[in-house]
Image 1 (spheres, rainbow, N blue to C red):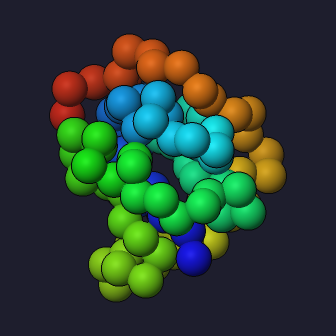
Image 2 (cartoon, rainbow, N blue to C red):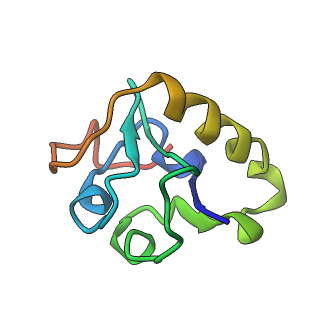
Length: 94
């Protein structure tokens, strides 16, 4: 299992989570972050760091956001890693 970034991240892209990730599994998209399920060790360090509550364990992703499980896996193959905190896109969630 892995953690999954979901809809609330889209449009705000806070990066507080990436600084606590011990395995550098976050990937940076244009409007949100993604978690690489192949490198995520399911430690949970990132979940409480997300100010918009966008990160869930895969088994707890709300029904309406289930498609983000596959989206994270797909985008993790395409997007570059991010390991440093950056300014968010906005102060509001998506």
